[in-house]
Amino acid sequence: MAGRRRRGAGPDPRGRRAAGAGPVRGGGPPPELLGRWGLRVQAGLGGRQNQHWQVEAGGQRAVLRRWHGLEAEVRYEQALLRQVSGLGWAVPTPLGEPVVLEGAWWSLHAWVPGEAPAREAARERGRWLAGVQMAFAALPTPPRPGWRPAHAVLTDPATDALLDRCEARRPQEVRLYRWHLHRARAALEGLDPARRPQQLIHGDFTAWNLRVQGGQLTGLLDFELARPDDPVAEFALAWRGVHDEVVAGFTEVRPLSEEDRALLTPLWWAHLLEGGCGHLRGGTRDDGWTARKLQVRSPLMGALAAPSPAVP
Image 1 (cartoon, rainbow, N blue to C red):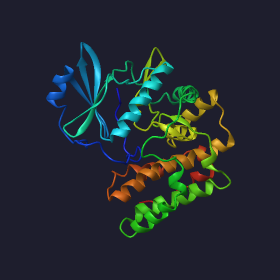
Image 2 (spheres, rainbow, N blue to C red):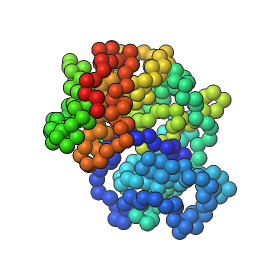
Image 3 (spheres, rainbow, N blue to C red):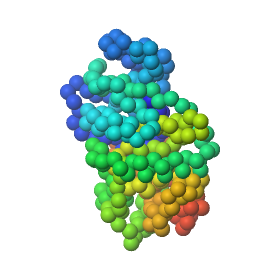
């Protein structure tokens, strides 16, 4: 099952849509599809962009997904799920080939059993993340369509040009973004993120995307952000500037280098800025999620924990 998504997760994939495929908003699964695959809808599971339903298929629970993205995105993630399924955790493995119907891609996936761990169990989640990272390191890392490295928004001159264009129209928001952008750049001085190792990352290693049984991690959900990137980007997204126990648990299994620690806050802010800049480009707004998260502070940030004077 692909779990619910949170706001500000990152940029949307870009590219050419397959003929007849496009986003569908609202409504449930088409009766034609339910009949073709012999499905009975049991419950809606929601989602941020991709939508999901719990269904019965051949007497078994499964998950039906309506994709928001492009065919290349669908094919990439389905191939990825098949690879990860061989590592020992249950994942929403595809149960056949996707189809296009009523302007969207649809696919059927295996149900992932278990329960979400308590969000308070952050130290345990950090230990699990270290184990997942070690296992993922053995998988191939083809690029995900439409994505770029986590640090790219910090080093791309187009980021400055975008903020310049939007400052008069959205001054408080842009000032907050620019302040964090400059602080993140200063923290990267002497480092070369482009030369850092890359491996497959899950991209959203949060409690609601994990499944446990008997106190053990047994399942992984929601691979919408999975891609090759700096392993610290994965770690930063699990930490989110607030879950310091994730750091403690991770380092019990895999100690972090000084460079890893130096990249932690800049890559977390880079994730937020990528999403915020996406809204600026599109002329849209989130509900304040990006601004709130940029202002989160942790002792682990060191000098970067200073509060921003550019508060909207």
